[in-house]
Each structure stands twice: as structure tokens, then as C-alpha cells.
Image (cartoon, rainbow, N blue to C red; front, side, top):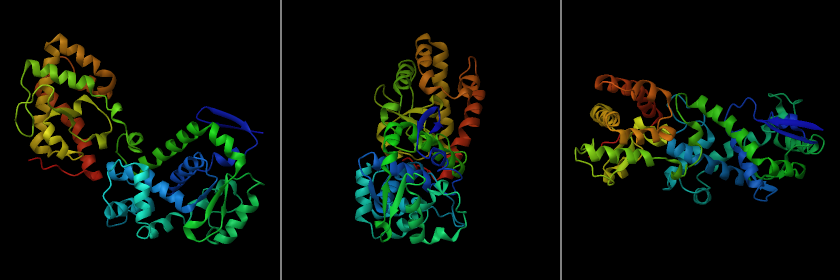
Length: 384
């Protein structure tokens, strides 16, 4: 009997847990995380025989949003800056073959992959070269990393088959041609995967986030960039209420058009796109002409042209907060969801803060985020 513990979960069973908890150790690429995640998700839908092709389709669909919406790098780049990671290359190629929304559903993405299967064949074959076998390496410590058996697929498949019951492997591989090889799930693992799916998923996500953070240094909010976030989590209720209250007192002008904004007839926009910064901090938000927001989408405004106008609106808002009790109460309501980063309340939104100091503090903290988003590949919006 072996007791396993992952992030507080304790589970006593006769499975080979010691090997399982080392499946994701020392990754050189991100494939292990996405392969294991795809395997669990497809298995939980009732499938115990899964083709390599199904696995790869699921992996590409799972990475689509991160790469297309957030420009996350899944692996290293070559000297000319092009992606070398097979998953990233597959997503990028698929984006050139068809027009899909960044937050397209898994069903639509997989449909597009199947439609363009021939064009994606090379990338798919790269993805099945090692990960289906290497993911099981923790169950086979007797095979060194440079052992020739790793490149002798038929021998390796037979070796895995021989250990399937002896070492209680989670799956074995049924030989076939290329992408038609199959994963055969071990039914002894079934109850464990069903009972502990949430915990195992969290464990995989944690490992994945740590890996991706290393490939995307300086990029904030990786955890929020793995899958589409429902708009209900974009908590802007009190921000909008605050700007409405400001407009009752003083006119507020759109920084792009210099037109006065009308109460309840504007969008709350992120100066640095939400798709990069992944939060709703008040210091990055502003009211904006609704007709322009659709064209701005997830692009960056020109810093030298618009930052001072943005910062002056921010200061105007905070001046009203300091002078009007009603606004101060609304401002306090923003603290839970929109004033989370400590420096905003310790350095920026402090009583008696002068305009020059306010603008300098905002620039000091916002400019590095802006520059990092630009380096990550977020384009510049040319406004009107």
C-alpha cells in the first residue's frame, strides 16, 4: 500500500504512486503537461483507447487561447525569433490556415484541425516523437535518458507492454502507423483519476505555470492565461460606478477623441490590455468611447501620445475621491477587486498626493508593464 500526497491530497492504494508523482519532473518542453492533461480529460469522457491523433488535436486546442490571445511562448525561439516548440508552431500555422476567434470553442478548433490535417501533419509528427513514451520514464528508471531503446519504437512499445501490469503503468501503447498508434488506459488507475481529477489537474497546472513562467519572464498573471476567462470574473461594477460619480461632478474627456464622455454611455477600457495584464486594477482602467473600444481590442495605445492624458484623468478621478465622501465610499468598494496590488494604495492613491507625484508614480509602475507587453508581441493601436 502506498500513500500519495499532492498539495494536501492523501490517497492510499496499490498503484505505483511514487512513479506517478515524478511523471512531470525535469521537463525540457511543455509537452508532458499538455499530454497528461489531454489524456485525463479524454479518459474522463469515457474513452479508454485513444489515438495519438486525438491526443494531439486536444493539445493544440488547449494551447490555442494562450498563444493567440496572450502571445505566450511555449518553448524556445531560434536565432531569427521563430517558435521551435511543436505545439506553438501548430497553433501559429493553424491561425494562418483559417480564421478562428482567439476564444473559439474546443469543438470549433478541433474541427479546424481535422479540416487542415494534411497541412499540420509535420507539426503533429514532431509532437508524437517522444512525449508518449518519455512521459512513462519515471516508471522505467532502469532506462537511462540516452539509452538507444528510446528511438527504437517497436522495442520500446514491447518493453512498455511487458511492464504494464508488473509496474502498474497508467497506460500502454498499441502499435500502429504514425498518429494512429493508440493509448490503452490501465483500468486500475480509473477510480483514482475519477476521484481526484480536480487535485491532479491543479497539480498539472502548477507545474505548467512554473514552466511557462520560465519561458515568458516578466509576463504577469500566467495562471489567468491558460484558458478563456468568463466575463463575470471581470469585476468592473464599482469602477464604472466610480467614473459615473466623477462625471456627475466634473466633465471627463475621452483621451483619444477629446470628446466629453456621457454617463453610462462608455466602455471601461484597460490601458495595457487585459489579455496581457490579466487583472482589473483601477490604475490601468479608464472610461473610453464605446465606438473606439471595439477597434482597440487588445492593442497598446501610443505611450508618448496618450499616457499623460490617461494619467491626468486618473488624477482627476482621485481628486474627486478625496473631496467627496460619496466617491470615497465607492472607491473603498473597489478595493476588493480593483486595488489588489499593494503599491497602488501605498504610493499612488494616498491622501494629499500632488499631481506631479501621482503622475510619476503611475508612470514608474505602468511603463514597465507596457514595455513588457510590447516585447511580448502586443501591437500598437493607431487610434483614429
